[in-house]
Length: 242
Image (cartoon, rainbow, N blue to C red; front, side):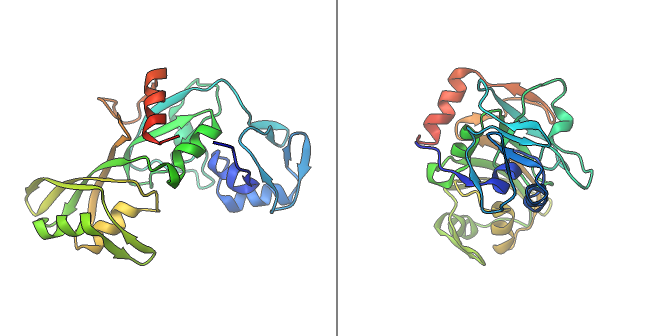
């Protein structure tokens, strides 16, 4: 797969520098360079393999690849830094020296498996919808989920931004006015599990991502970080069809 250039502000945001608007401000103020050249145009594009600096410090380059599994706790934002001072991924990385990129995102209140890597190209490939890597979640929702609702989730639900269809939906437990569902889907649309379950009348109270492709949490505690083996990395590659 050839690496396609993307807008520089998007690349910086995916690298965890900050929000896309914040990254645009950095570019406009001449604080960003690509391969040694200062860039001030917001339309500029770059690749993960480029050397990109902010205020002279390298923030994106092509190092030897490492990949981690991280169990994101509830209340942590999926960013390496946060302008509002909220808990973020960097708070859990300890003495790790590599600059890590997150593969996709989990919203602030969602827990569970997040993949971190120092290889931006890998992060982009694993995140791209064309590679159809599946994600599995355990959702605790309000109400007792009926068989017809399970059927609707698998056949398709129409949201404001288009239809969504779960690959699988299994009722694991119903007790005390709440239900626990295991759902599988490929979509990476924003808050898609929460929005879909709310649309069928079952707002989410707790959401945990347990698997990305064939990779699971496997006993990793909240806030825990685990270096993946080469076999596990290759398995992720197979899962994502590239």
